[in-house]
Image 1 (cartoon, helix red, strand yellow):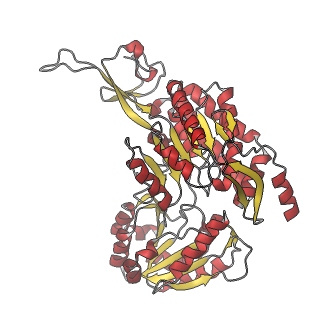
Image 2: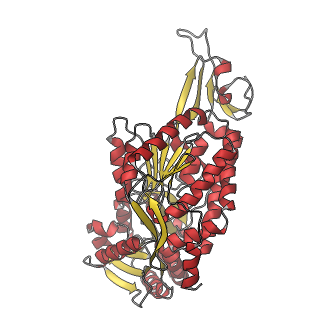
Image 3: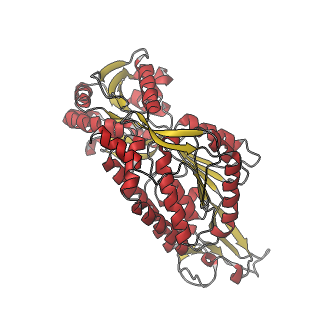
Length: 541
């Protein structure tokens, strides 16, 4: 596509106002104005966005707090219809959404369409969860009034929503992890109103999706304030939202620095609140010797593609590869270095992200003992990342914490360990990660239980003979891990079980049946499976 056509398509998007959605009303009272950026064309996009003022922030939170009083009581079936309507409205945006996504991210149309499909799938998955209803984990222990020495009361427990939630849009997933992405879908499914702090790199995409959410809310009779979308050129709007006493939780996908800052602020509030942050990860890959001896070249080709996929801007990018010295590892490093240079550089999300990649790559390369095996040095287009492969001795890696840090982009480091003991020690010294991968022959894996155990202790998902890039949206997926991969390793940020971040257990004691929620009533009107006196059943009482 010619540059002139791309520019025209960007300018033709007339649906964007640059304003904030305060509930179902557009508002642009602020004097701080900014624009998004097209990294492919290396120009600003034409629309001006108005950063939310303190008054607009307060209005959005007040509306959300009022909406919660009603929204928390709305049936699962009606909330399911709301989520399905959001999906329908996003699809109805058609090509305008795809064009805006591409103009603000530098990503391809096929990537945009794939991420839109994933966003729709997530919304529909939570809809099905709500229709079934058992996710509330209803538990009933019936009374024993004649028990001695003390009577036993009637106790009934279920999960209930915690209140208004703030979701921070993610730079690397303008749809699936942003305005109506997984965090928002899960919180709305739980019964929590959502205020999105739109990511400044894709505010136009955010506004389009926000308009779809608002239309869906109005179509399905949801209370005004169940959703708001606020613009921000920096961190101030997010900070003010987090500090507001009516906000009860935060969802964040981004850097360790950003996530930790939010976590610290939330813990210092008069009423501390949870911050569910999915942050940095270098996703260690362990290559066992026999696998390397038998398929080093094919593995190297596979990993060259994984390292550069999406310009290395996935949170599961394989940034660290570990192996034991030998001819197999030598062959792997040689082939990986050759193959990665055959791949054309691609565009990063924003000049600032490209700049951070270049700086972090240079910091790593300057470390003593690090060898550069491949560094794409041919001239590349502006904002295009030049991929690199490096290698280092295991002892050097162990002694230098700088080498343990993520380089966000198409960069990977191969650590050459002296022996199995050093490999195990190295894994144990790693920070928490989203994923770990074991590359092995089947009969070989059983010989390294200590390596598998060490990996399991450091990650949230352990992959066998695959690549970490690619996160399936399903109930069994865990997208999280020990800190700093996430701030709470007990939860996942992907799949329907991510709803558990936005709820709390609540117990009714000796409560009249007619006043109980349907999930806990004697006749089980929802026909869900419940734990009754320690037996799972869907029977009536």
